Length: 633
Image (cartoon, rainbow, N blue to C red; front, side, top):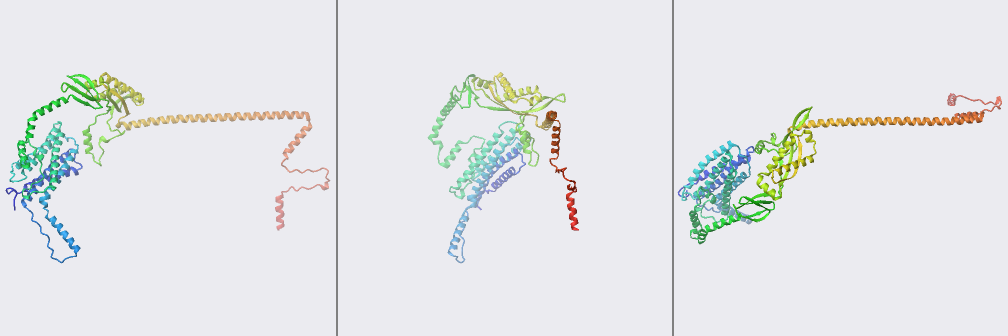
């Protein structure tokens, strides 16, 4: 079997590439599938997986290319022999097409032509995906112990990576064609381990720039991955060289720039001369640029310094112009020319920008994030998710005086307040804000809290909850503006918004019970008052009806008595005038009235006794029934 270079087999590249492949896929799968993994650990696993997969792409592509060179040219397959009987012409054509397609597929050298390209492209793409996921994951520092352990482990892993890089750097190109490229690529995981260890050390020491270090090394690895993907994709459309001198396409010039010294210009010139036939040392254009470079650099520096005297301010910007440390004028929006730095400097000041500050308690974001990260679906919600009045801010609480059962006490109360402010539009306000106030929002918040503390200290709970909200806001805004004006801060308070004043959430249940009891007692008092008023109205109505009935009855009796008196006086006068005839007339009238509905029989006294009629005084119905019974018998 033929061997690559001076008889070297490519199995070490397979072992190294397989190790990086297993490590990269393991870390990537853990970061993607482990839901209970802390965010800072997932963030680190994504970065480690990205570095490992990009390195595996270069080593496995080099192994596949070296294995193809070691094997040599593939024997050309022969078309299959058909000794059977001939088929139908249509079937015979179909079989011939199949034989040609199968022969073309078998003629492709998959291991030499496509395996190095596929390994380099796919693994570089996977590494780029892992680096992108790690870039997007925003995680806290993870604690001092985690940073110490992760930094120590990464520093320990950097030593074998350095040995690996030195081994391939010492390898001659005659021994292995991809040796120099793999030496350059071996610096990538070494840079990643050192960069991540440095970031962990910065977080452990609570120093800045840890995120910048991590993202810088991640960006370098992403550039290497993109370069390898572009190289392998370009080789698909290029004619392949002879197999004996064919190299892996998964190499990176960017990885070769990762070194502790400046790039070698002579070596770069020799590389360009050998590959493109251009001698940069004899180029007149480069010689002219070399001679003109000092004057050009000096001119650029002078122009850059003069440009510090040109300032363009936007519509929402203005600046206080200082000449030799003394404020001269306030520059409005537009283009301005002034003395360059350090003879003329500008202090930027906001112009008309409206801002707001909320009177709230500063929340512990890291503690809330850690609690939210440790919460599970089935478990209890974190403390930061507890809401009573649907508030997303930590309202500030104060103590107010109260009177309970005749004894003085105090109670807690929360307030949700927002203050809208801006820097005054005058030049004096701009100069005052530039020189007298460092953090305007903090000044507004501090003075507002002092005024609130003073107000709640001299007010009772009833006064606070029962006050006129608009009048209180006007008084508060006037006091705040007066305090800011006394400090000559240049800050203008535009509005004060009080969303709510209520007891704290933990006392809400008790205060709600107190309010419910007070409301219930007031309802009972109002109900009893209404019932008493209703009873009084009903009694007055009954008394009025009784009085009216009595008055109407008395009037009717008096009227009847008056009628009877008049009638009696008339009859008396008639009796005095008529005598017996009046009495007879009255008697007959009474008889006529009494006999008006009675049957009357008149007997004449002149009828003889023999013709006196007889009267049957029996019941006529009883007589008829007795006569009928006799007839039936």
